[in-house]
Image (cartoon, rainbow, N blue to C red; front, side, top):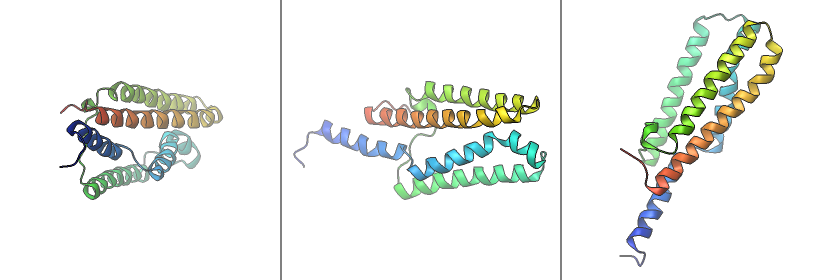
Length: 155
């Protein structure tokens, strides 16, 4: 037995486990770039005239499969399986819901601007929306980490 009290060992284990709730900086850089590309689809569609063809659908499918693969590889390498549902993290859920609202309002706003022929304004709004969504995602992950550290994760 070590000389460390049991509660300190539990706290240290929670802190170590909580590090797996955070993603590396490279993930967030790629996430931000993909976010701008996806949020700007209405804008890029007016320039490139892609329509709703198979290219966009295929690209979104590849993106979804890539994200799922990244998560499963990360989980397999670390051996840590965190709860997947946001309802397991009580302080992260309100932030996550706000993020969904910001994302939907931003995407509908960009689509409305493009539909009304104001593509230049939509281009100015695009980085603001992408940055807001990225910051909410970072804040959600931080809240998840705090919940893990404090032992508030529900099953």
